[in-house]
Figure 1 (tube, helix red, strand yellow):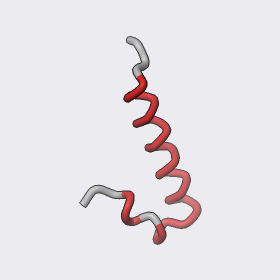
Figure 2 (tube, rainbow, N blue to C red):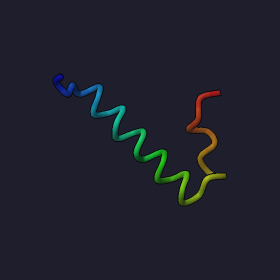
Figure 3 (cartoon, rainbow, N blue to C red):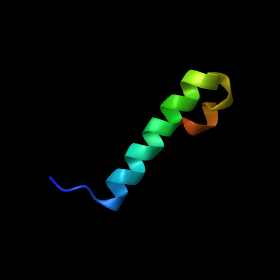
Length: 34
């Protein structure tokens, strides 16, 4: 299983959103789909 650039972008984005949510959840509602 190889790691593509797209996979890395998705992984970094997911981690960043999770970290921001844990720090200031109410400020990152726009990062959620819907």
